[in-house]
Image (tube, rainbow, N blue to C red; front, top):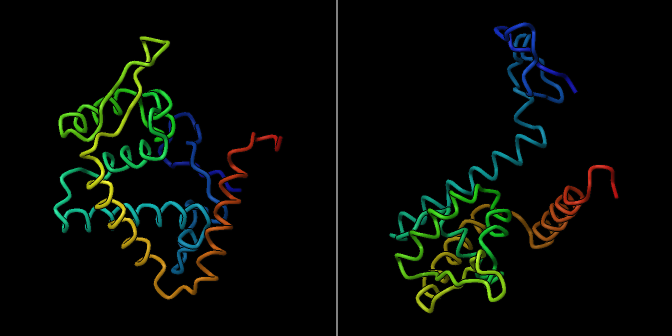
Length: 178
């Protein structure tokens, strides 16, 4: 791994930027090998999936944004989840989640309930009105998935999902491999 030094960095301190095979201190080759690295492809594919979801959601006049849709899908998979665990699952700050929940509650799609044994904790529940919205979100998600997998056989699609599942599991384990 090559550590990159920003030419204008104060006191020669290296920023936290790492690249497997590209040294930005040298002329950048025409082929841009950074675009074929694991990290770039994974991150950029995720970005493109999000962008496509947003495009299709707008075209379908979905009245909620992508972040709100993500909250609804997470709650649907684990109804009654508390706000702290939901923020962790979404990898967002709790205050950001509160804003999303406020909007979803105003739209009548979720409700917050006090935890039965800890009054400091709020749990999140779907309302009956969330059902049709979740159906719309799933339909858009399926279209994005179908577009992303254009040209893939079912076997290649299943294999890729299996491999990504293994990568995911590896990264969930502790850094020391335990």
